[in-house]
Image (cartoon, rainbow, N blue to C red; front, side):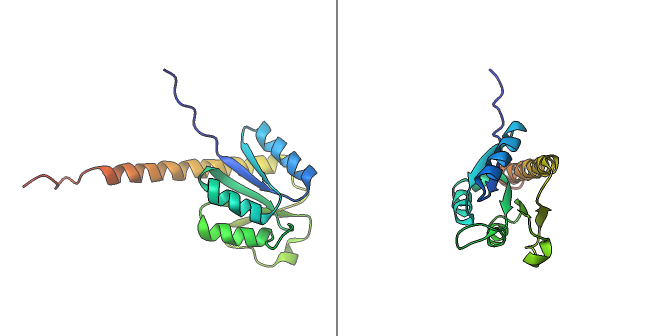
Length: 151
């Protein structure tokens, strides 16, 4: 019997420019990541509510259509999933956006493909490490205490 393949963790790409979104998806899928595409922050948040456990990284444009922009998405994600890696990107200077939420990385456009792959691999590594720690803690919590059963 073969070993079960580990489930691939996903990168959630939030970009309103369809061509750039397709390029990001192709880049990440070529590097063996699962890519989930969203056009707006609202769509991305809905996706996170349904598939948040599968996502290792959010890679989002700051300027997005809809009520929420990328900064709003990053704030909401960091409140709900504080350990999730969030990268915001924009073709505008970072100073125009003020302070980023804590723990959010800024990558200016045009970004280099290798930089995107590297940050995705780092996020995946952190995500796997965190998942192993959680599994170990869950397993330890199921173990009976040494004092149990002794009189």
